[in-house]
Length: 336
Image 1 (cartoon, rainbow, N blue to C red):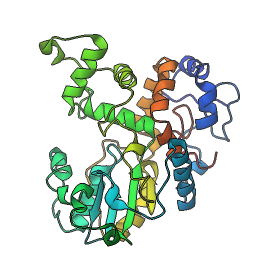
Image 2: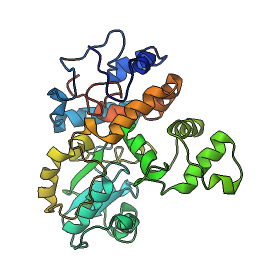
Image 3: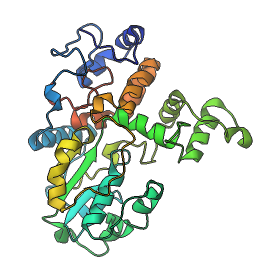
Image 4: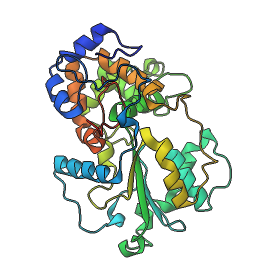
């Protein structure tokens, strides 16, 4: 049985299944369209799936090891958190280490940790996100922490991070930072104009002020540049501290509702200052960025999708993340 989400046509699914990269993704992501499709008794979003169960710590550790092998990295035998970059924080009062990956809920987690640390005592203003990531939390970033703490000082600290399906993360980043979508972007306007300038060839600054990139143009720009160092669009595996340490908990954003309570308890935080979600659905399979990812990616030339996938290949491996054609997209496929 083939799954045809509301925003996909049978024609676009047929196009995807005949793509040059289909065999590669079939092997690596469990592509669930076209010949050889294997969908385990799932014929609607309302069916109960084994992948809805949060992954265990042992399974996550196994996936991290596979990811390190793919990246040809060797993890140190002893955690060395002070070697991590500025995406990693240390909060000494609650003795917690957190790596914040943009577009994976990092603003809320940094705010919760600031609350637990006693640095935040009021509700968040959505307009002051930069304040949370800047002045408010700067002293807790590892590039500052290492000046005052040694690796031994951080031993025994609880460590965690939150990651996300690369497809939905990319779509969410585009919507939030580059698009003209109401209530979303474009907070990275200069990058948006740069994309239009490079892909459309528009050089007039006045014209560029009123032009916004399409998702396809953004994808072409990423591929042309072979990625970007901007954290909102760079692979998660480049921002995590995988080489230097092992996290106690790596939480898929798709399972954060069920897994966050364990972390909230450990850091003694209530979560009462969280920013509201842009999406009303609690089911990640029904959220807008998921539906748009299905639609936009299926409309792309599949050679582009293959090239884009290769940029984020390690991110997919990290949680065995599902492809946009899978009925459980964007969940980790821990039971495949």
